[in-house]
Image (tube, rainbow, N blue to C red):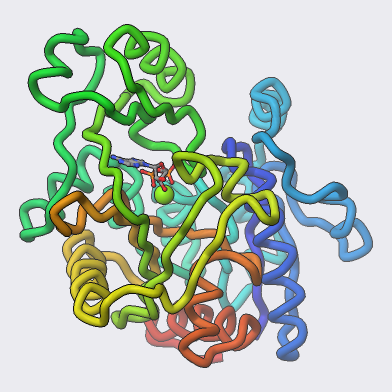
Length: 338
Ligand SMILES: Nc1ncnc2c1ncn2[C@@H]1O[C@H](COP(=O)(O)OP(=O)(O)O)[C@@H](O)[C@H]1O
Ligand SMILES: [Mg+2]
C-alpha cells in the first residue's frame, strides 16, 4: 500500500501527533508498505528530515501557544490536496490528535479529495470531539454520564447541579490540556478561565473518583480493558506522556463481570456516536460501581506504548500488524483494495 501519514498540525497535541506519526511510519514500513510523512502544517517531509521532527520526544508540557499560532499562520490547510504524497496515496493514516485532525475537518477534506483515511468519518469525529454533544448522545443510548453544566456558571449553581469536587475542562480539547480538578467553590472561576483559553466552550463536570478504565474498539469489537493508575490525582498531560508517570495495566485486574460491562458500554458508545475503524472510550468507575462515560477518542495516541496499541497487543495483534489493520479497515470502508 502507498500510505500518507498525516501528522504534526497546530493543535496543542502537535508533539504527541508527531510521536504517533513517526512510530506508525516505521511500523508500516516494516510491513513493506511505501510511506510518506506529511505534516499538515508544513507539507511533505523528506525521509531524511523525519527524525528532526521531534528531536527531544514529547515534553512535560504541550508546545507553547505562540509557536502553534505561528505554524497556523503558514498552515497548508486546503493545499493538502496539492501534495503528491497525499493525492497519490491509497490511504491516509491520520496520525493527528485534537484540532482539525480529530474534529472532522480534515476527514471532510479527504472525503472531497477522494482519499480513504483511517478512523471515523467527519460527522462522527465532530460529534465525539464535542464532549457536551457526545455525552448527550451516549446518555440517550443508556450509558451513565457524570452530571455536568456548561460554563460560565456561578459557584452556587455548580454546587446545586454538579457538586464539589468537580472537573473543569475545555469541551473540545484532548490530552487533559486546560483541565482542572476543582475542590472548592472559590477555585471555580480561575479553572473556567484556564479552560476557556483552549476552547470557547467549557464543561464543568461531576468528579468521579473510582478506578479509571479505557477500552479500545477495533472495527466493531472491544479490545481488552486497560486500567490506568496515574501518579497524579488525574491522568494529566505529564502522566500521559512521561515514562513512569502512570501504570497502565492490560488486561485490567478487575472482575470479569465488570470488564464485560465496560466493554459493552464502550461498544455501545462507539455505535451511538457512529464511530468507525477504531476508537478508545474513557471511563471512570463511581463509588457504587457504576461506570461513567467520560469521552470517546477518535484519534487515540498511537505510539507503540500508547493505550490502544497496548490493548491490541494483549489481543494478539503486534503494533505493525495493528497499524496495517487500520489501513485495511479504511480501504474496506471505501470498498477498495490495495
Ligand atoms: N468527571 C471526571 N471525574 C474524574 N476524573 C476525570 C473527569 N473528567 C476527566 N477526568 C480525568 O481527566 C482525564 C482527561 O479527561 P478526559 O475527559 O478524558 O479529556 P481528554 O483526555 O480529552 O483531555 C481523564 O483521563 C481523567 O483522569
Ligand atoms: Mg481522555
